[in-house]
Amino acid sequence: MDASGRLLLDGLDLSCFDRKDRRRIERHSVPPSDHRLMFNGNIDDAFRVGLQVGRKRSKLYADFYASDIIVASPLGVRLAIAKAGGDDGGKAGAKDFLSSVEMVLVDGAQALLQQNWEHMEQLGRMLNCKPELSRGTDIGRVRLADLDGLARNRRQTIVLSDRADPDLTAWMRQQCAPERGWAEVRWLYQGAVGRVVPVLRQVFQRVPAPSLAAQADARLAFFQRVVLPRLRAAATREAGTQQYTLIIASSSLEYVRLRNLLDREDVEFAPISEHSDNKDVSRARGLFKQGAAPILLTNERWCHFNRITIKATRHVIFYGTPRLEATYVDALNSLAAAAAQDHAVSSLLLFDRYEAAHLERIVGSARLQSMLEQAPAEAAAASAKARLRAASKASAASTRSTFVFVNESD
Image 1 (cartoon, helix red, strand yellow):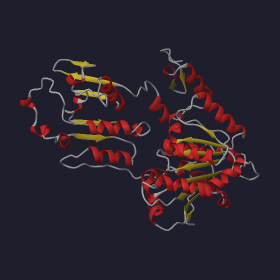
Image 2 (cartoon, one colour; image 1 turned 60 degrees about the horizontal axis):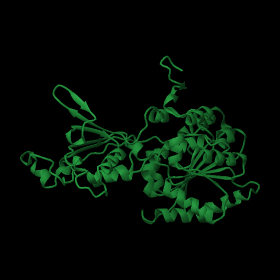
Image 3 (tube, helix red, strand yellow; image 1 turned 180 degrees about the horizontal axis):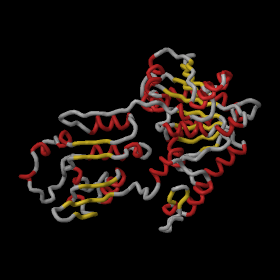
Image 4 (cartoon, helix red, strand yellow; image 1 turned 90 degrees about the vertical axis):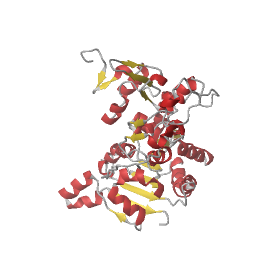
């Protein structure tokens, strides 16, 4: 506890959490610093504040129609419109305050990607629409371009994110049509495979998808044909099978499809999702740790919001490329305890060419091009720990972490 009376744990302010969450955080390991930076403090995702700026004073919580600046989340804007009777509520003019927006700044867009992206899509469609009510507006002061429906062409839109993402690019292309064009600044990534601590074979399996619409069906068919037989053997607890397997789905929809498949195939597993309460999560983790459930199924959203190490994990399967490279690194680093006890550990990631933006942050910009274009090949890419061992003694080649790219046809 600091001088101001706040309850702190390794720099994390616990006073903003309720008693149950506080006990859970104290019982488990402290989340990483980037997770604490995002979730520490007030994490209300439905905020909305109007700011009216005058010559001598400024007014907070002003009415939206009298505000010069609106600070809000996409969910907060939609709730405000719904409260006014709009957004399928049937009342006209509830979203008119969005018709005169001249500049949009989306800060921390990477956090919005882990929420309901439909709010951003709906908000983008409502920006700069023609108002339905006049509300005493002086028509002589309205720009002719706005009356012609060209306000979105004159709007300035800035999207700030620590990563490039197809959803962000699609939102910019669909909702923004500036007269002078738009620019996108992207980084070259070194890759997150070098941040993996345990020595293991990281396998990246390319699954051919004929089109983006057939992506989900192609991945599910490959999983059922190739991966599922090994999981079924693990469920029978045969000697040498792939027990203690953690499966991470890339999205909630993929999680549901995979859960239904495992149910149909009568494969024993324990599910965890972002909708599971603390009791169900503790029960599933307990069954997995004790070996009663050989497979633990979860999704990336749950991993993002919790960042908890799943103990007893020996094998990790990524059903789709994770959107966040931290999900990949955290899951593979959880294998360190099993690797230290000389247990067999492995990693398998299923990807396709439509997930290039996500895969780039994991394998690096230089390696991505060869994975998508060149012929499949097995290339040794030692992790940081394996390189140190190789430099210290020649026999480390047999224990070096390897990066393996495999094509579906192989």
